[in-house]
Amino acid sequence: MTGQGARIGVVGYGVGGRWFHVPYIQAVPGWELVGVVTRSECRRALLADDAPGVAAFDSLDDLIDAGVDAIVITTPPETRQSLVLRALERGVHTVADKPFAPDAASAAVMVQAASDSGGILTVFHNRRWDTDLRTLAGLIESGALGDVWRVSSRFDLDDPATLEAGPAHGLLRDLGSHLVDQMTHLFGRVASVDAHLDHTEIDGVEVDCGFVVTMHHENGVYTSVSSSKINHLHDREIIAHGSLGAYVSKMSDVQARQVFSGLRPAVHVETWGIEEPDRWGQLHTAAGARSVPSARGDYSEYYRALLRAIQGDDPPPVLLSEAVHNLEILDAARTSARSGRSVSLR
Image (cartoon, rainbow, N blue to C red; front, side, top):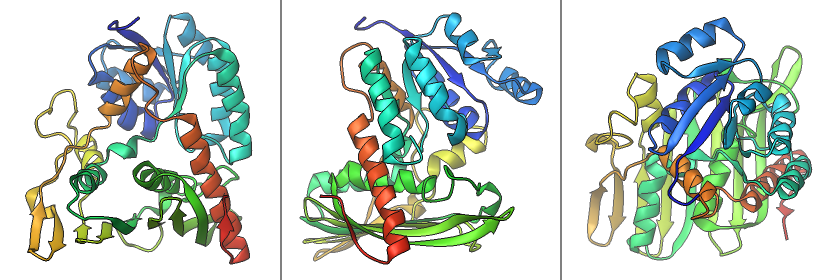
């Protein structure tokens, strides 16, 4: 089906479906958004306002019966696996939101189901296309930092209301899965992990509300990712050290800011995912300090890559081997935090 369009549906119209999937699917020519599964009358009304003409369905099977090539599962982690397995059983390509699974062992069931179905299963690690990460990637590719030695990535959110308790929840599995994926995307597989987790109590259940995870990558790069949600701090910072200098970025979460303000990537193409000049990162080298212009971040690239994969032109935007390795890192981080020791993945 090279060059042809494809039909896609979304299951769930909460924060993920409404803000981080539907607008970006609609921004990619070639995708036809068939419908969204949501039983909530309130969310159906939002869908009608946000995407006029896009149908609402009661169930995954109803949506698949309407005729789709691909399904996006955006429901909470505790319901995600069964829906992914059902979509694969029905023979449609499937996108699973993150976290892909509670742990690497649980992910094996879905990996096997994808293999048996012959379809594509991929994970929505959209933050590979964050503005600040794309800017850093371009700087690394240009050689301006020389050999990269170490990178630290901190993403603090003053957002305690969105912390959820349960075996599949916690900040490490939530934002942590993105931050770990960003580092493995840039620097490859990880050899060992050290971690610390902060904990709080929600409705009598202990949940991790902050983390620091440090990773020794197999290529020798050392990275650290951290986040918090209950410390009244809202800040984003990336610092990269290399043989030729250092780069410091304090860009905002550009695309989230834009989409929450009512802008859409299909409409505001020229300005989408570009940071304001006063927030550009600084490169420090022997020649002095200079601002590094913002690269364009665009989560639509995920859905462009998915369409090419379905057409048979490219691999999926996120390989299952990459998604499973990220879960192995998160598993190791929890083990390290409990034991106070480094955990080897070799």
